[in-house]
Amino acid sequence: MRSLPVLSSLLLAASAPTAFAAPPASVGYAQAADYLDKDGHPERYNPLNVLDGRDTTVWCASDAEGAPRGMTIGFKGVATVDEVRVYTGNGSDRDAFKTHPRAKKIALEGKDSARGFTLEDKRGLQTIPLNPPVTGAWITLEVKDVFPGSDSGAPVCLTDVILYSGGKPLNGTKLAPVLKYDARQAQVLGTWFGGLEGAADRFLSFYVDGTYRFVHEPLGGGEPSVLTGAYTTSNSRLSLELPKKGKVSVKFTREEAEGSSGGHTLALEGDLPEEWKEPFRSRP
Image (cartoon, rainbow, N blue to C red; front, side):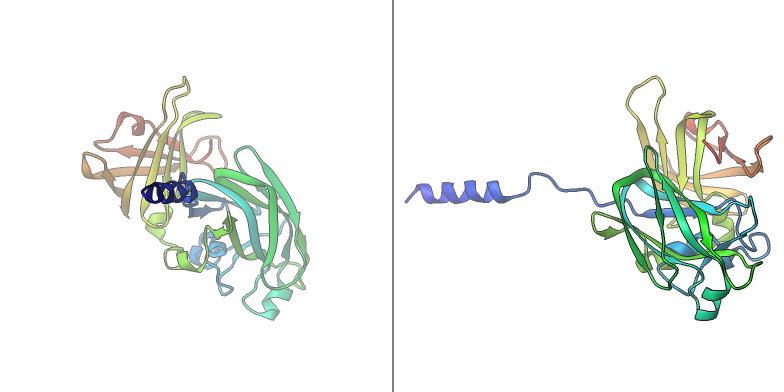
């Protein structure tokens, strides 16, 4: 009889999980080089609209030949996307859906993988499994082909793109309160790249929820370092929470990069770690 407690303990230990899976990295931002009304009313059709799970908000871009029709979606860490649910077109009402061109073929590309898929021309979410999945700290989404709208001059639109990992959504209505355009935040939102062009080793990401993530991956090997914290923006200043330093006020300049159409640089001035003091750029 004395062996029963021991046996029970062994059975419990055997049935218990040996490790806890880390929660999937949620969506942190969406960026687009251009979109409808970007300069006049950027809040109307900006790419954050496709992440909020609401059919009353949409992203639209010019359907003219050669115009950019895509965006970059970033995660708070590295994400593995094995399913995507897409609401093509302008789903705000039936007339808008018919008037605007709808995305027909979409390509998703991560760090080491890419997938393409074709949508049906109908309203509502369409579920597309991704096997193999697309993985990365950010992915690019590009509209490759469209269903024509009744207005030949109307922009192409997407209503929602909900990304899933292991059956869990990485974005959607739960994130809707923070997925709103903020003019001050928009100046820095996204991932900025430091180091050699084509071989970046520093990655500074600003997310819509007011947090940031800095990753340094030394090109010569060595252990990568990661810093995370909160940030706020005010005109041309950032307030950053740095480990062991507390809140640091930083002046920043964001300028168009020379010889890089659509590219920008970000320079920070303040009491920062050495790895932050060289300018960052908007492209790897």
